[in-house]
Length: 514
Image 1 (spheres, rainbow, N blue to C red):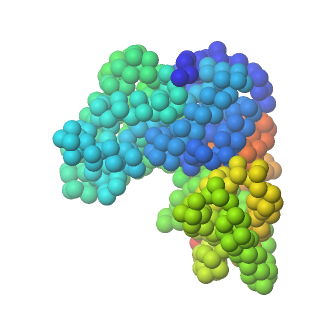
Image 2 (image 1 turned 30 degrees about the vertical axis):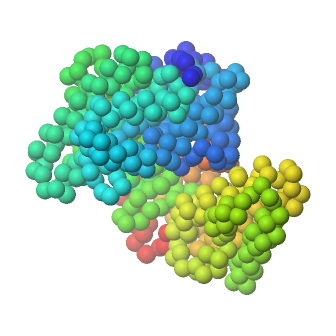
Image 3 (image 1 turned 60 degrees about the vertical axis):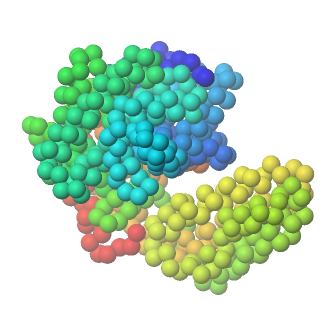
């Protein structure tokens, strides 16, 4: 187990070692946190690319890592623990320089199985919200104690720096569906939060965590939203526990299209969430900076890789080439590998063969965003898992060693070919968004990729401590950090965000595809 925790002195020394990067005070914790943090929503243990990306981010100055017990069903925390163990164990960094934040509340996957077994055993977790099949939620002290213990073990830490209640508004959503009166639901909701906070104060005293808070998607929501979480009321709960409480950080969604954190006056005296956070000295972690939900659409705020459409014959040929490469693996190479049993060969074929799917569906994804979502969320994780398994076996197999780099190039060509179908609309949308940004605030017109601009807008906004970015590849780390080395003034940019809020609906008024 790694002892210690982040300290003001340790994070200050790290910031001094990277003078070109921006570091912000993380509320009243006294810690300095990098303006961009490593968001672990889609990283998993066993994926080499994810581990390498985290190592690169830490080596180049990123010092805040945000994970959760339900990210990759615990695999995210395990990956972070493995990387920290390697880097701290080899003295490439020290524990007091890095801020580790995790979250708890969800019962999915292994947690859901655990919950069902405890019910059968007559020892259920208390106050569980049975939200949907396969999904429950809980912030009762008994459950949180169990979850913090599991998180610490996966992370290999004696102490977590920050621990957040993860979307506690699931209770409000459940109560609304059950027809519970709004006033009664709110009363019970904040009672549960107070109960959780009192437990978390005890966890601080026991040295298991250093500070706590809430990660809620509904901090920026309108007050009439049945799942609205009132930051002012949360703060009053913390103050009622004691003036020396350790509620020091919140997390919320904020991006170019979801601007409520900066413009939604949902707090007393017509204040926004960011207003109250700044007034109370709370650290603010921003999630979903590049995945914006607007209406029923999801917009990925990143420049597209393919800028023009390929000829249909070229697209079809690239898919045929991919099919031939896959066939070579499972018909010729794998049968000759005695170390790979037959059942595993079948699974490799099922997980790693992608050409047949492209052959039948390459024209039916409908939009670039839907294609990218399927590619990054479904297909590539499976293929990467197969490649990670095969790579260690290539040292003693020349055929496999030659096939891997060749297949990667063939796969990349096929992916780019399919993506090119949607390039025209995607490029046009990207240009519209960049122009919208420049008109909203001149400081946001700095040259760079769309993702850099989107992050720059958030980083430049007073009250934002760290923007959590899903840097799952080393290239993503480079993209984020290269722009953050260009200084930008932090200021109250409420007017700029209001201009964005007004302009955003116009982006889609002509029916542009996403």
